Amino acid sequence: MSAEILSGTETAGALRKELAARVEAIRSSQGWVPGLATVLVGDDPASRAYVGMKNRAAGEVGIHSRQIDLPADVPEAELLGLVEGLNADPEIHGILVQLPLPGHIRESRILEAIRPEKDVDGFHPVNVGRLSSGDRDVLAPCTPAGIVELLLRNGHDPSGRHVVVVGRSNIVGKPMASLLLRKGRGGDATVTVAHSRTPDLGAVTRLADILIVAVGWPGTVTGEMVRPGAVVVDVGVNRVDDASTEKGYRLVGDVDFEGVRAVAGAITPVPGGVGPMTIATLLSNTLQAAMALRAMDEGMQG
Ligand code: NAP
Image (cartoon, rainbow, N blue to C red; front, side, top):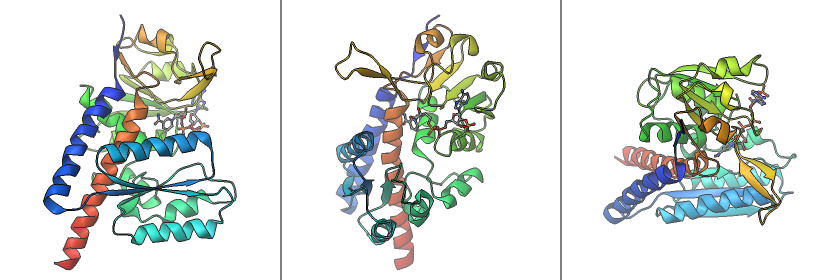
């Protein structure tokens, strides 16, 4: 058996088309567009590439995007002041501060300063709490929310299935579990979360109808750890040396793709799987935030 390839590139393309049509409808009928501000501190090449991709993707669907670049030694107070300004800016509906931040800046202070209604990354404690309480209108973290959309749009509804999530980070694993446990669309799964202290990982992963792996180590999940026919979502992005490529490396996930592909019913590739869905979900969150903020403003005026 060779698994169905779950293409995030294709699914994200369809989602972005829908978003572009919705943004255009707002622009032509109401005369405004959603706005996204991205903040990049320092000059880490990977962070710069991610922020660039996010801004380009925003522009392509008609979202107004503003990138703010700050030097690596920017004082924490200055960054907080910038966030305050963006919180009050009526043209900006979504604020994304690219992580990680330099060591002298407390990430938690910055994330907590972002107005929860503009927190399109879904990392503010208020949004984290709302998500784990089962709120269906909350801005949810882009990677796990994108995975849910990828599953649903490809006929793999998690409802009633046993989903095993490997990894318990605040960015992927934990919000993934919260989303899958929510009642209603995209939720209603039976969820198990595994991590580095889980003994006999394979015994746990073999129970999964849907297996989601977010670990950060290539080859963590091999073919014999997967139940035949399971759906496997590989979140990992890892660089491995490859002298045959121009850059000297290539990107691989956390899953042994070829070994697992032979056993699974469906599998996401790396690249071209979860990554494009993460970016499309950021755009979708920005539109959602903009609609909610506009409705709130109109409510206050009326
Ligand atoms: P993270 O914060 O480092 O968390 C990794 C998790 O994996 C931890 O919970 C850790 O357990 C667990 N773990 C590590 N080794 C393990 C093992 N051998 N067996 C079982 N569990 C193990 O990483 P993250 O931010 O969640 O990211 C995970 C991966 O996803 C990375 O490759 C990252 O680049 C990628 N990623 C991709 C996207 C995308 O859009 N494509 C977005 C975000 C992240 P402990 O908690 O016990 O340490």
